[in-house]
Length: 371
Image (tube, rainbow, N blue to C red; front, side, top):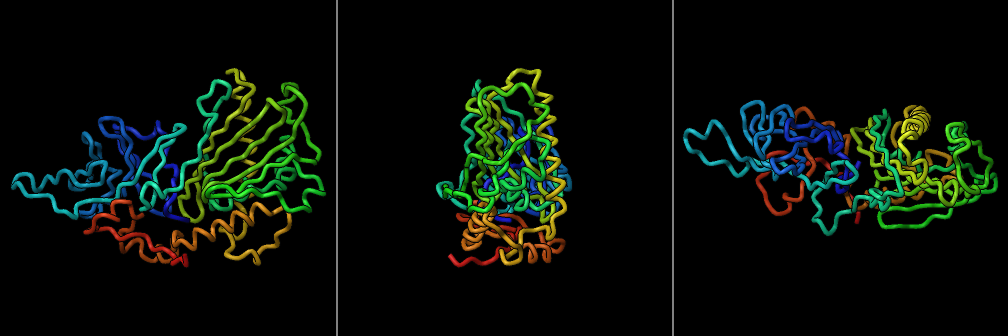
């Protein structure tokens, strides 16, 4: 798991000005809420007074109030009120602050940048150009999977698994010649991609039988941006396409929450919604049945601990990118973190830590890089 990337926190509809929302990400607790203007905020979910969980408190105006002693924290993380000091007109200590993270809302999802990079240096949230277009229809799903997020991303990058895991879905498959040949990989900012015309045989999904329009193209591809954002294109014909965007939230080392924005440019009428949802859920369930039972749970620290073949080119490239972020010193030292949790309040460093000091919570331990 890495700091310095955008992570989905919740659906926009789940973050309200009525009640704070508690969320676990990267093994740590966070709280999300909206202020009186409707702006979403994400803070570390630990009051610096006596360790109360802010997410169990309530929203008061533009602040979230701790349920333990009523300390209030604004969207910027600074304490705005300490009830026990009001009567004596005591000042608020400079250290009375918690980490507050940059937030963006896109595609009906609240994202938080969990790291301390200044804005110009931050990797982006993937841009879905089709979103909002009348020529495309979106369905958004949230799935909880008992698997490590890197294993989930690798599954999406893997073109060979389709014919074995999704046999009944009519998914594209590689011909024997393609399976024995390294995938053509294109390097993109913060990731790598492949897109090819599939040469294997296909079955027609019964849910889509008779509705496909035009000659089959049979082209598809997948790519990642950062460690936790995945894109998959399935172009059945020149006018019948599925474009799927997965934003994955690592909860901990064995659990992931997946936000899937599934776009299609056909079957746009309302009567097709339920059928398309059923197809999507069925395919996802097939994938989860595999990734939830992988051994080891987490990505091996060396490719020598698995036997990779030419069809695994996209997997190898993804792991190369992980090593680049390792070199930057962005990987969380989870073993060291677990050793401190319970005895120490730990959080992800926010950008404000680069310009101010006197913080109470310690920051998550990182594995030293070499870049």
